[in-house]
Image (cartoon, rainbow, N blue to C red; front, side, top):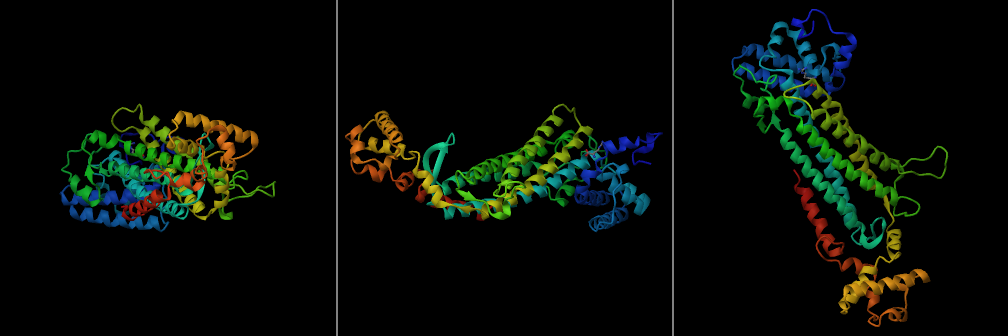
Length: 459
Ligand code: ARG
C-alpha cells in the first residue's frame, strides 16, 4: 500500500504511477532529503514530540540508508513516487513502527522545498568556484596582452584600435557581475522552509530555529503558505545561469570569428577542436559552437519555469514538481560549459602579429587624426570632414592614412605638419586613451592588478 493509501480502495494505474513519479530525477537529492530528515527527527526528539530513543534510532538508520545509497546498494522504486517517500519507505522497512514517526509535523510540501534549497545552495557554491577559475584565466590572458593591439569593432566594422587585454577584460566585468548575481541568489535560497507543513504549518511545538541552525540556513521562511509555494529562488538561479550562458555565448561567437581563416587572430588547441568526416583540411571550433548552442537550453529552462509558476494558486500544487528537471539540467550544462570554455581559452594560441596587422588596416586611426586637428584649433565637425575626405582619397588610391605623404595631407588642409604621423601611430592611438576604462597600457595594468585583488578576496 502507498504511504498515503488509507482513503483509497483501488491502486493507481501503473502508467499513471510512471507519469507522476519523480524519483527518476529527484533521487539526486537523496543526501539533502536524509540530512533534512535527520535534523527534523532530532528536533522532534528534543521537543518531546516523539520519544528521544525513537529519534535516535531514526537518525542512526537514516545515516545507514545514506551510506547504502552512496555504496550503490539501494534501488529506488517508482511506485514510491519520489525521493521523500522512497527514503521513508526504506526507513519503515528497516525499523517498522518507529520509522513511521518521522513524518510527524511535516509534509512533503515543506520537505521538498527544503531539499531543493539545500541542493541548490551547494551547486551555487560549485558554480561560483568555476567562475572564479574562468576569471583567473581571463585576467592572466589580459596581463600577457596589455600591449597586444587589435582592431576594435562596432557593427563588426573596423572602428578604433584597442588591445586584447582591454577586450577580454570586458568579459571579466561580465563574469564579475555574474558572480555577484549568484551570491545574491544564494541569499534568497538560504532560507529554511521546514515547519510550513502542507501549507498551514502545524499544531506541534516545532523548533524551527533548531532545524535552521542544524542545516546551516541563514533564516526561516516567515509565512507557511509562501514557504511551500515559493520557487522564486529557482527562477533567480535560472536567470543568473542564463546570463552566464549569454556571456559565454558572446565570447564563443567572437572566438569562432577570430579562429576563422579570414581573421586568424587565435587558433584553438587540437584538444578543443574537431575535424570533418569529409573535408580533410578542417579544424572546427566545435566546443565554442556547442557552448553557444547550449545557451538555448538554459534559456528554455528559465522560460519554462516562469511559465509553470505564472498561474498556480497558493499553496503547493503538483505543477511545482516541474521545477527540478530544468534547473538540474541548467546546472549540469553550466558545470560542463564553464570548465571546457576556461580550458579552451587558456590553451588557444594568440596570433599577436595578425591582430596588430589587422588593426593597421581600415582607417582605425581616423578618429585620432581628427582629434589631432582639433588640438591644432580646428573645430571637430570640420576636422571630421577633412579626415573623411582623406579617407575617400585613400580608398581611391589604396593607401592607409599613415601611408600618405605630407603633401597629400596638405592638399586637403594646410594645418597638417610632420607631427600627424606620430599622432596616428597605432600605439599612440591606444596609449593616449588614458581615461579610466580605456585601453591604454597604463590604465589596463592597474585594472589587471585590481582584478587580482578582487580574485584573491573572493569568498
Ligand atoms: N515530488 C513532489 C515534488 O517534487 C514532492 C511534493 C509532493 N507533494 C504533494 N502534495 N503531492 O513537488
